[in-house]
Image (cartoon, rainbow, N blue to C red; front, side, top):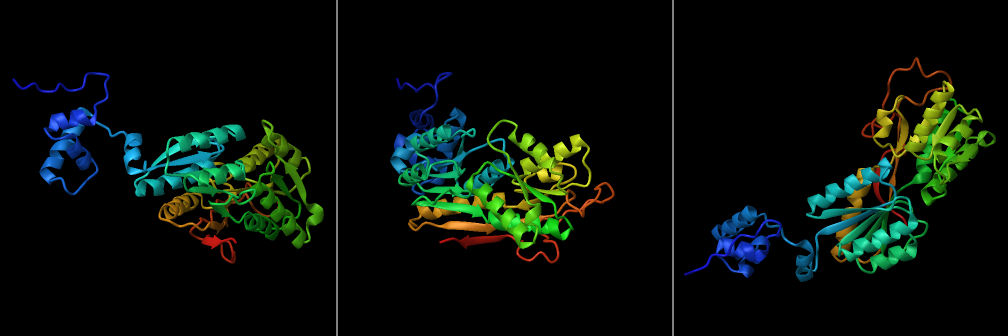
Length: 368
């Protein structure tokens, strides 16, 4: 009497052997069918796929990678999951990764350098095919070591370029200049800057602010307060900055700009113009809607995946792509005076403000 193999019991994960038994074919034929091999007839392939679906079979990606040499997984490592800039870059990564058949594994550093390093190592141990690092906190040596194993792209401005690592960034100095010139053209002179915690992008934005204030003859009115790394640093620095009585503030990012708006509201300050940086979703949800420098987060994520794919395809030379940001003007900026009487405005990224040459997005400019 022929004995039929029982289906896998409850709690046991079905295997390729179970699928072969259910379809009445060999294990090797199941493997070929699941890979989409053209040598398997349509009828046999349909029977195998139906059996796999019926049993709830899912292929073991890591085991398959030992045979194929690829997992079709990309690791994404970011500093701060609570920062919308980071999450919007990741959304761009996921969009392009999905289009190319990759699954994305997300690792969160929680603003901790040691944890970032451990998370990078964990992604490598999972045999990901490439890594996108949305952070400037990792040491160049750690990035270079990782790039010796898989393609690595860093999204952001690095402290220094690591050999073998591609980068995607925006021109932070140009973005700061656009913000300051916009405020000056509205008639502001007492333009203050809420600066970041000393990372490369923050330093570049601070330089752009200071140099533009000097070029406009406003250096005597320049005031800078740093957020620092302490808890509630944004709120404290914003309060200290407003104590200097500026008529306008350029903030290092949208989160810092929101802290300024909040402190101004609490203090009953009116007529203050505020510009943020990143143009995250927060810029359109806060009231007044926030004027912000747009660095195209989704495009940066898309480009990171393209650079990984090029590396996987055999490219060996390093590439450092710099995108030119653009100012998006909304309700939070106006000539000095009360904001209440102004109607809503929004120069969307697809429609640059008239006369604002140099603020259109530009892709793929290479640095040496």
